[in-house]
Image (tube, rainbow, N blue to C red; front, side, top):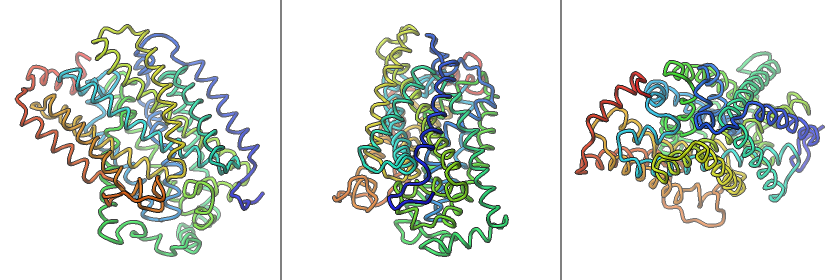
Length: 528
């Protein structure tokens, strides 16, 4: 079977069967272990009963998204060394989580980021801000996953029309909604563990096969990658995509800052720390996650250059899905139709698991922070709270489907980098100030969150992401005013500065007793 002129790879029937089998098996397992009761602890946090190892594997499954499997491999295949910077950023980001966030957040909150931020602040405005931030970040992150679904399906199932791709994105979204409605956090965790194991095995096997083709010589692989790339030997060195001009250099710095600081503010990552019984297991979770991701991102380097060597940059860019098609095209080259079917299942599993995690996080934030603590003033019964969470999951799923159709065709690693910028801009400053600055108050929290989120949204809207570039989401018009594709270098400092100014200029005084209580709880877990 060869690559057809239209971009079809492998056997669409086989790809569909493999993916369908994966979906049926996981749906059955999710149904068996799902949280069908009324307990909020079970639905949001799997009862807090996961071990550090289980949560670490699930956390890596939650984090290793379509951006990692499809977008990063494609970025390396086309841009070489500069594309690998995504991998470095994603991996280094976990040091911030390990050293500053994981243990303290787990000890202070129960279900959501809003629990931490509202601990010593006025509940209603802070929980509303936390819920707004969570919903915006989760929806933006979902755009990347759903766009990845459209790209993979178009290539693997020979679906080339926009309508056909939109239909497939809708099907993926509906399956994801079912996972969340039936399984809750327990079912979502099971899918993420299965997906993490299968994804890791897949990339390791592809890496071994690739190196074997070149006599286990990395030099030979890189030489062939350069020979089969339109940019030639430049892909071995920095500077193909970033560093050519002052603007691209700034864009690279902004991207790096967003990637390194963003993971510590991602709501779906923070929520997973509540699924373990104590702070020690939270630390174990992060250690296991870092270990798994180190292996994974090391493999993406070989896979990316291998795609350039065996497939070629011209074929990748001419395929449906463009850069996102690099890994599937490579799988077909080294393993034929069977490996292509496996990669199809892994790619879909990746998307489903991550979007399910995002959906349950966003729905939990609305149900727990807005419904239970703002509208019902902390007096909502567990049954009604879980019901609201499930209804919210349906709404969020529909919005994610619509957004994925709109963003279809964009590089998913690039879209996820924007979500990281939103997370770092809106959440990181407030988390660090809340945990480590006793004077921090409600006014500072609101200034930090809304200024970071608002500035990031505004800069993205007027950036080349939206208009003015060949890869912009809105083509044919140019209303961009901000030159950088990633706004992190501007929006993140704005959040920190506004949080500081909002605190020191406010007449409101922080509650010293609450600050001491939060410090003791964060460090020891006593009273949680």
